[in-house]
Amino acid sequence: MRKIFIYCLGVLILGLASCDTNKKQDRYRTKLTVADMQDDLQVLGQLLQTVHAGTYVYNTVTDIRNLLDSVQKSIHTPLTQREFYAKVDYIIDRLRCVHTDLRFDDAVYDSLANQKEFFPIPLFKYGNKLYINSDQYTNTKLGAELLSINGVPVATILSKILVHRHVDGFGIEGKDFGVNEDFGINYFLEYGGQFKFKLRLKDPQSHEIVDLTLQPETFNKILSHKYEDTYYFFPSDAPYDFEMIKSSKTALLTIRSFSFETYASRQAYRNFVSNSFLLLKLNHIRQLIIDCRSNSGGYYMDTYFLLSYLLNESRPEFDSAVKRFDTLPLEKYSDPEDSASIIYEDTTTQYYTKINSRDFQLKAEHIDQWEPAPNRFEGKLFLITDGNVISAGAIFAGVLKTRRHAYIVGAETAGGAAVHNSGAISYILPHSGLKLNIPTKRYYTLYDQQPLGRGVLPDKKIVTTPKDIMGNEDPALGYILDSLIH
Image (cartoon, rainbow, N blue to C red; front, side, top):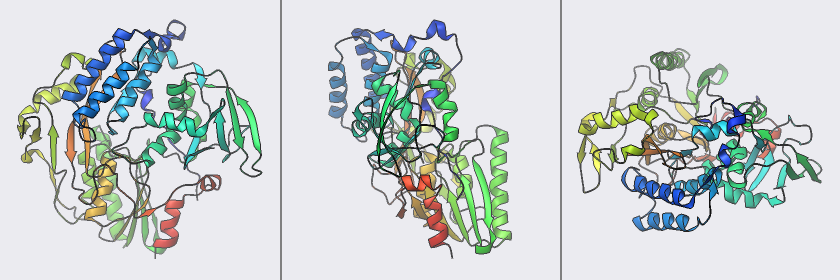
């Protein structure tokens, strides 16, 4: 198997810009007053109560009120931007929504850019343990188990940082994937910047316990460079690929994204899909493997364009969509840079009708319908998923499982199977400047065999192990090729 790498989604990189770090190097250490933080939490509560489409899916009104009250009561002294961020993110995580994300303001990112305070080595979570996930560092070995950092056991660290990876519902695989992607950032959010990292490791061969000290790395470096040295990297710069194994009448289609925002990129994607399925037909391919690991979603139109080549029935893009307001509330706190989304909300109000005292539902005539494509594939279908498949990527997997009976290998998706939130508007908390993407619509999908709060479950769960990483193996793809392809 070829070497595979892991890609950092880097949600926190949003807004990162170059700057004069001498002027702004302490921006993220600026302390907020208790009054300002309490006011920001009041605004957050209002946004969750009136704008967020999924606030009360996994929580009651009392749950949310008690959650906000407990966080407010925990604030007695001024806190840094980082410390307050961690408290707000704890609230966000309780919503169990992968589309709700939190970001620092641009000035904080500027001040962090070249600060050498971050954990430098990529890690891999397996069970409740962490392993070194690179062979490019002199003093550490690929596959070595990390036992502690600065005297804190790994189990304790994990219990704190998992809150900073949000998933739909109750799935754990998505949170595990967040550790693999963003450990350096999430460790910083909980423990702050460090001037050195004292590690205790277990050698993967001898099992000898080794103590060593590492120097930290900059924020820019951990986001942009070190992932070149990390296993299980799924690049999105070329988000699709196609290859055939003619000897077994099998093809492998790789799809990492359904987000094509320009006319040229969308046409290129559509040409790729059309040509791929023409090749399947001309070469009499009987078995198709679709690898959608790390597919972070995108647009329904791009998702269903591919699905139209895989389904033999007419399907709407989703069953229904619901929002909780007629006119967008609290617009004074919205991000001015998100004006296009706000204008869209204002101009599409007429497409919704009130269905009860709180909800507005999209009229059926505004849900696009898709017909089967002429060269659709009707052979045997396999799908590979992982804990980084979200949004439209999870919908894609769910539809294929229920409507096409695709055999899924891998891990549960982080994106919800039955319902999910989308249509985010960016808001800014007035004192801290924290930016919050709040999904305004709740989409009910056509995936009809999965309980609320779970992602798309695989038919065969294949967990990547430290041994797989050390051996450059892809166990999910290997299982299909070795055990299922005939």
